Image (cartoon, rainbow over all chains, first blue to last red):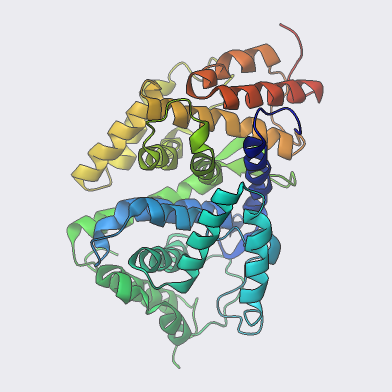
Length: 203
Length: 203
């Protein structure tokens, strides 16, 4: 498309928006509702944006900036274009994760004009740190959605069945810092997954 | 999950957020970037939300409320859960579209608590009418994205190749009301699609 758009900035934006097509072919560990294929990170991102819109009032912190949360959720998985979707419970694969993802963020957000690159990198870093109320709420939604999906898809076709319910509980318990209601629901969903054999029981 | 959540409102929200899983298995006419499968309406929705964030300054109207645009784009295709994805150029299929979609909106958004149902129905209707600056910008993004996708996926696996470039031009020319820059880019993309045999040439 080079040379065909009026502004250089717009051309960069179009290149970025074309590159992100690739997130639609980054597949996760769980399936879509009819079990026909694995869920991808783009549709997962859409789902949690909708969750943010609907569950905003469930946040215990009432100072949430919904637009910032939405922005974090829309872009939070883009680094996977270079790094792939790393399974939360694969300790080995996750060791170098942070370094690899930082390089991916630099490359992918670097396709954008400088001011947008800066904004997106900052939002992505804030999301990863889970310290601010916006980031905590966003991360809680990101961690609750797979549990809802497991329930909706009747736990079909999960790639890895050796995850212990107690590990899931440990990884997800930070949700209570964002929303007691969402954590209650998440615990109930973990219990159901355990009951249906998706997670291994006990310690 | 009945009875397990604290508030009735939250239970309704969870039911809605589980129902919307189905948008991930509503497939469109175009493929994902590697041609391995058709694109679905959930990941398409994610893509245009990201486009809204990135291309906001391309709107000729500078009074755009980005959060409202995002909300419209996230929910704009949910009616397809009941109605399916209707091909823009299938005149016959589109005749009853409006009536069917209104019923779908009533059922799907009706799963939510009343205040959220009202908000979403109103946003969806506003989007469909394309009259306000927010709705025009949202609809322009929704109409530009497939052209970008055709280009990125090298026009692989399109379902229907009998569409005339002149019809595409007619259907999409409203984009210029939202953004001259986006319309220039869209025209260029239509020309490329025509050149590569995706759209039929001439009148």
